[in-house]
Image (cartoon, rainbow, N blue to C red; front, top):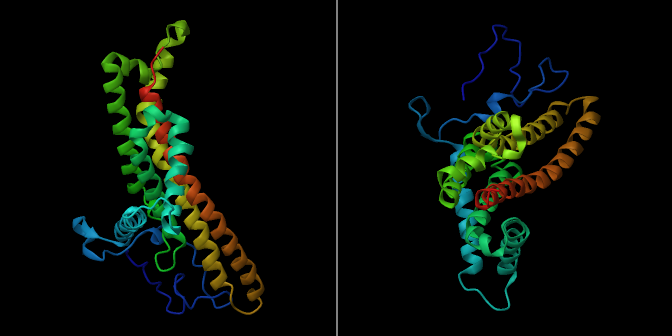
Length: 278
């Protein structure tokens, strides 16, 4: 991350300095683009070959998820222990509450491992936002939701081709329906654009935008709590700190909700690919 240029006025305090408080002659250190950029931990950012904080969190998150389920199921018991019980509850919630409800048991069983993996991966990437030291949601970087949405998109397209063939695929993505009459060509163009362009875009952006906005709000109230901690501003700092706690609790709900919505949409797309076109 490049540091902002220092003002020519030596008495002006940089906005992001930690000793910057209200009434000290410095501006509010508002979160901005610099809050989402990180120096490479390894490699050179200029050469595009590097390893930074978000990559580290994604790697650690994957290890945490794999480690959790391995520890829970490596020696499964008929009467499960606490760890196995939690893992089974999470697995069963996605299997029955999302996959079976959307795809049915017969069609959906083969997709359970994928959907469960997607849910817990997305949830873990979101959770980093409220975990001390990490304090950043990986999915607030658009590249990560985009890749996940691309995986779902490729799966949806390939399943549609496999199940219906080229003609069936064309009818599926264009919403071909002869009963529409004269408006059929226009409806087909709209459906084609919506399914092949808008669908993967919104699938990725929905997750990204919620995590980006949530992290920005948490930063805003957290920084404000520190910035106002001076003189009469202490009273306002207390209010801002309470809002930080409230927003953190709300963000915990949103993180789980967005992971749920992401996999629910994934199942909906798969269901559309498998459904017979009439």
